[in-house]
Image (tube, rainbow, N blue to C red; front, side, top):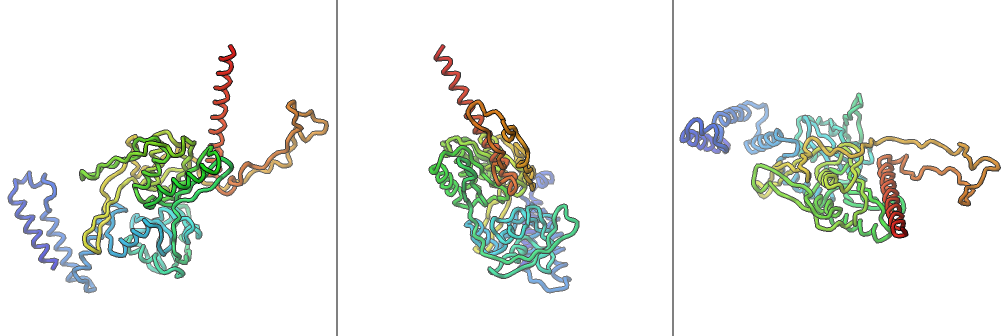
Length: 437
């Protein structure tokens, strides 16, 4: 079968090349390269005849397709029926496995981000970790789809992973028990009265609507003085959802645009005309696990001056993948375009640089409870405003020890709120003075 197809390709290429002038043949795009096709046929035949095991033509051709796509970039892959179903599961937010967003790098599977609440997250796996073995099987030489298939499995079954971590001298093993991963795309809570928190774990098809609902819940409960939008370890997802989320915090304008070789790859995405948060100050948290759609949101809000971006540099996935069906059971996920922030910045391999860099760290508050102040001295004078003095307080938030990046975001929002109130007071005082004069 293959030989017949290849002969036709070679014949077509030869006829095309012979019918063109030499210079035109070189410059003409889309022509099949005759010499390379012959080389491919020779290599194929050597494998077909001489490889130690007999492999049928269909399998060899699938290997050739997989290898061709793997050589392009880490995100272009050949999707079998199972892999395509898995992609749909990730979009809807429920599947059985370990809860990892992964990519291929230098022949190994690299963790982009663990999913909140998943076995992988609870085991402490981190963005940047490299999976060296799945069980006893080395990952080197596997395709990304093959590795994902091994990590998937029925809930309750276990698998051992050998992990290489940057900064660690030796790999280590971790045993994970597979579970049904239900990705709660959005959740919200109060950090302190007036200061809200919205966490987006992944951009699914309904994430824009879910963020809108979360924002409305916060705004109806009490006055929203500031908001933290947490995109840390968010691997991305549906492009349209990232546009919807960014648009909730903008008064119109461009969110992102894409450019590719095909005419239909050049697209502009604009925000809705009304800011649903009514101009509430926003801090967006990102880190090296924030990728793709997360970077679109952070980049758009940064370019429009709508939010302060805090944390560490993001992952840097600035490419768009398109699912191209090949048959009823096969498809290709192909990188077809790059996306750019409203100001024309390409995120690809660069990421989003935070406005304020804050590394994740373990912070211990200094105990000031034994320090003596004026109010502790006997016979101290009372405050002129009638107060008798106050004791030292503990740190304003328990976040200091548990999540220093979130603590810094909350502190910044408080500062912005205080500054805003003082500016209003100063403006009112100036207007009153002008009226009296």
